[in-house]
Image 1 (spheres, rainbow, N blue to C red):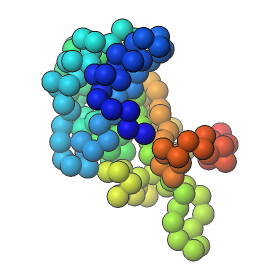
Image 2 (image 1 turned 30 degrees about the horizontal axis):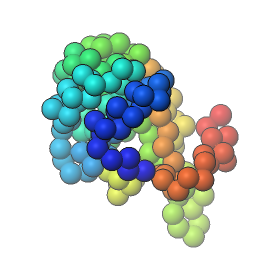
Image 3 (image 1 turned 60 degrees about the vertical axis):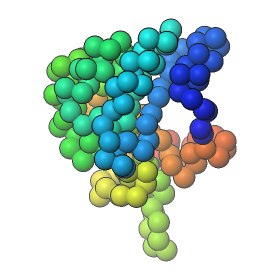
Length: 169
């Protein structure tokens, strides 16, 4: 759900004493853009809680630069889904605790399809891998955290897909 200007949202969550703030530029990879370092610098300067940034991150050098700017965690999605081994290099540069893998998951589409699939680039591309197996591989490669976003329910304020969560056990 769009919450407005990221810097203003940062200030609001500071006032509310949130435990952590995650800012995701969900269009960056889909549009072929890298991280917005000017925005990251402003967010890090304003934020009084642990901050996680994601969007367009594709390599360990970008992760290191973002962490050096004062961001505690960096979220990687499309690049890590396409090649989970990059998480190892990222974790080596900044530590596992700062590497967050993000999986966008949705119900398989089609009359005879069952289960869930991983997608990237604003759900315009799918990956032929089970979410659970990919999550395990990402953990083995160096992800300190894994965020699962169920795109079918994103923004509808209906809560989590508990059936999906149970399938991840």
